[in-house]
Amino acid sequence: MTDTRPAPTTGPCQVIARTPRLALRELHQGDAGQMLDLLNDADFLRHIGDRGVRSPDDALAYIAAGPVASYAVNGFGLWAVERLEDGAWLGICGLIRRDTLPDVDLGYALLPAYRGMGYAHEAAAAAFAHARDVVGLERLLAIVSPDNAPSRRLLGKLGFTFERLVRLQAGADDTALYGWSRG
View 1 (cartoon, rainbow, N blue to C red):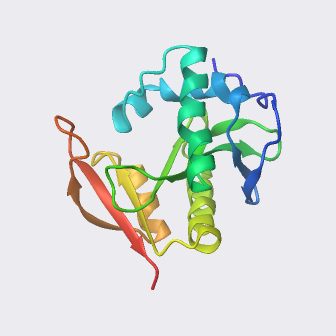
View 2 (cartoon, rainbow, N blue to C red):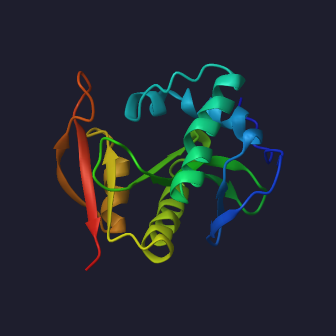
């Protein structure tokens, strides 16, 4: 069972955005347990992929090498999504610069208990607004498994349009590429 208590903070934790129900904040090492649960969720594995994170130490390394490194290099990355009313850790959402894509991409994933409640849309809309208004991106991408209808609908609600199917790495399945451009 997932522990929904707030993750212990191990240092300064910058809040990136707030919505009526959520806060998006930088990830830190105290998030390793929840990250381990998320990255090994069956739907995450099916729709996003296996990140090879199998232990708390793997989760710590994933947070350090991925989101935390991205904050330092890009000024953005994946952020923790927390519910304001009780501090529950719902999942991750944020901006990712990938070598396999020409522009920054919007990504999100929630733990199973928090899906279907509008939290993903709320978090993704906040990250999208941050990308557009704070970071100043002129174009933003999103990738989604072609059979992930809820995520495809969510991207449409945010103003993304389907562009094409892409293969991000040799031997991988096709991924649906969505895009948004300013103006």
